[in-house]
Length: 22
Image (cartoon, rainbow, N blue to C red):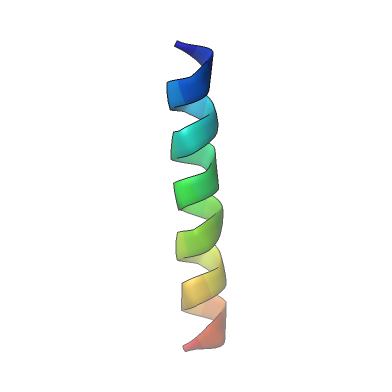
């Protein structure tokens, strides 16, 4: 399930970016 981990990591990065932007 490497793609799932990659997707989760991407989602986490986006969440962090959104938090920094806010």
